[in-house]
Length: 343
Image (cartoon, rainbow, N blue to C red):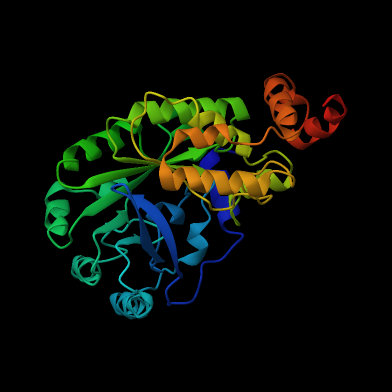
């Protein structure tokens, strides 16, 4: 059975949401032009990513928060709900569990209304490349002080995009759309650490190579260590002990291996320190999370030298060493258990 067929099978296990209210909103902080700024983030409930109706990405479970029957009036009500919680934060991030620029999710009139409703220094929206049109982006950029478009590229390697993620577009398609609008808006690019079917070493190398490849195309790089979401092919692999989320050590290795990348690099905190997200061990998880957050907020690379030399580091090194040779004989969990006595 092919990857797309597998994903369709697992996607049927979890039904889509039947609610029509805002999915979520939260406050956070982010470095912006050398200062820490308050951020207001929100997720509109829309029809969701169109690809999730046929296959979808192997690790993405956001489709479970979407609703195929959402109409413009529902989006308008969600906007009112969002504005009731907005307190003038200088950065606003708008998500839809799909593409903000997909007119089937949010029509043109509502797109403008949403952008004009927030008095922010910068508004970040997210879209797949196929919905990015220069003329439309130029028009939308006139509605806000600064518009930033975020692309979920995930990897700059077409083999990984197609065979590990099932992304549905190529690196060059991302590159062409970015280059067509980079003089109009700022660009943020999301990259994954450890999509399914890659070993830990392969995942680290893919992330490092991808960061180098996009450094001249994007203004911000956001590293998203993969977390295991419900109703996905990745979750099925995880339940069968055929996938382990990345180590926190792997994030540090990637960050310390990119001296040539001169762009802000943020690390998503989603799932960090949990069994479904990137984790090390109970002894060092909390300290790692604090230092990773500090790095994202300061971009001070000397912070990367402060990470504790925990005992679990030797386990991480051993797993990276043996995984390529013994993976075919058992799952990552079996291998860790088998070689636990050698650490």
